[in-house]
Length: 291
Image 1: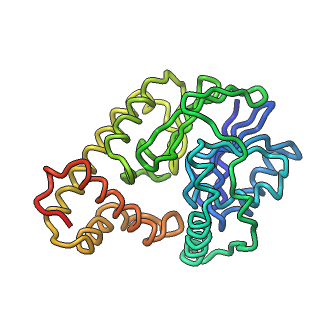
Image 2 (image 1 turned 60 degrees about the vertical axis):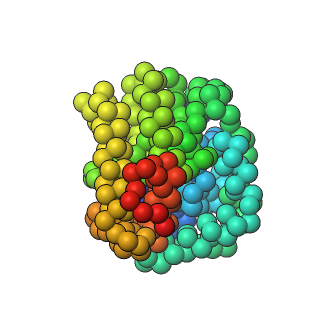
Image 3 (image 1 turned 180 degrees about the vertical axis):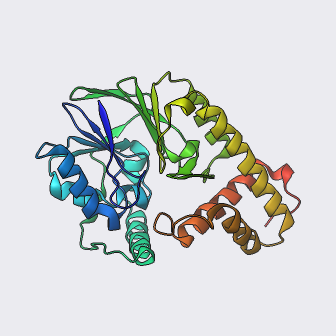
């Protein structure tokens, strides 16, 4: 098994797992799709792409799928059942198209809006704790709810873990972004679930391969950062009387250093507002006022 970062723009977004069968983890942004496909084609040198494994249904993970399907019409796209259902909803498909266009504009890059919505859909739904074979690879899927309700992670050949954003997001050059959009407590549970797999290597979404010396402690680090981010957000929410003021402060703390090609401001505000709602629901006793 060999792993290659094939992100079309930047790094840490899309990974190719080589073998007799070739797997793609995530499909990336629409504006990064063409260079991503070129990197995959160069790496495969005429070979077949067998499958795409999606961690969830957000636009920055799925909007490169139409380009992948054009290049490899026989590819099979896997995700959990909830992601499969979401990617048939007209409202979700409209949001993906809109955010893809806004991200391309913010990055100053071309994107192709002329794709079919059907090309974003999932071919095969996986259940929590399901293990399948794709060619020579054993793929074990498990739910990591917290970032979204359709977040899944994968263990490949009992050796490599492909993590969803639920366990935390570190940029390619470091930094940390909380991502418990729908369930903070679920994020803690997902870190515990991930820790329980004795894998040799870990890939963090939007970051890449964890350095070997850091692998043993990565789950402690992510748990510490998750708690720290919760405490920071609760403090900011208590110090500001309106969500608008709180969101501006959270943008300064967590997002001001982020390349807007990687995450436009609007996407951050959507995510941060979701995390604030999650904290109000799960930690009402920690908040001085409710909005």
